[in-house]
Image 1 (cartoon, rainbow, N blue to C red):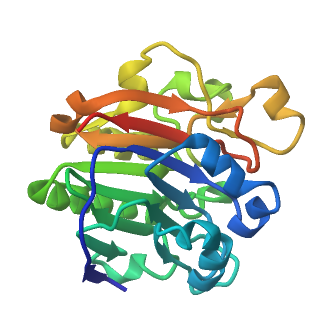
Image 2: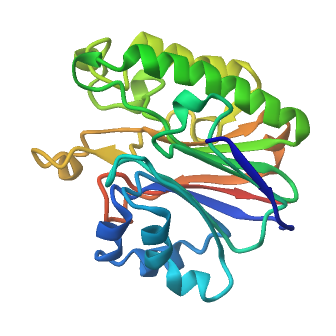
Length: 268
């Protein structure tokens, strides 16, 4: 359901995005301590697999210190879900997309801060045998239009598990996965490219042109140890905001999920 409500204000910041693959499971692996180590002003979570109340319970130590929490959950229990935790109160909070068909899985939360919108998304996986690829393509188009609309009001920071490896450098085995595996089909690649072409910058790739770095590794077959991974997690920004980006980082040393956090630092 498309919901917006109004609140208050923010300052220059570090944004961390992390697919926690179950926020309650992550809590048992030291989530709060790891968040403190990352020293961010805004945390964006995907795949919380929890209700709003369960997310609030996990993050209660930070909420008790004055952090502001905005979470969205799926109708299906233990599935999907996103959340944003901010040190400062936002001017506005928006849950979901304008199209109601996209809003049953809790996949998008946005907050308007002083200098930019922060939008976090858990983009639908195209699934086994690419069964959900058509839906995924429609989602990509609708999200791009949403971001363009937000960008007309204020620059946008768009982050999350975008479930696509954009270029061959972004996955360990591009040839064997191309057009066969969810996250590396031409349709998904084109959807991501269209967002960039509409006026956004992939902060990590712009600052680390030739660096091989991944943010997701399968739990199977010792993939993390062998560094057989994919870069599925991103921080994109409106082109006019890119001059404010001072760092874009992938944090493979931070464990607790099959994804690691990614971050961007802004000098506002």
